[in-house]
Image (tube, rainbow, N blue to C red; front, side, top):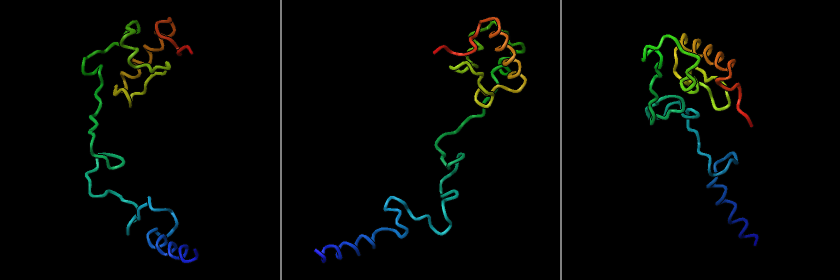
Length: 120
């Protein structure tokens, strides 16, 4: 039995990397963690599979100047499920139209066309 324990110890010590972190962790190499690898980077994380198109303001492309507060279908597209106004970094609306959109949503809420929050 003592021979079996001694026989297994050198094998497991030789195959495991030093530091005791286990076989699943790979050594990082001379420069530490990879900075860019050899792959083309398409953004953070170096994943180049998906190309994100720059969002264009819906109101500018359709040349809508005034955003009516009575148009509930239009406004619901810019209100989240919980009732929050979706930020412009997610919708792609320009700054001036986002301000007008916010004002229209608030007006529609005040006259009960849109809910302030969802029921639960």
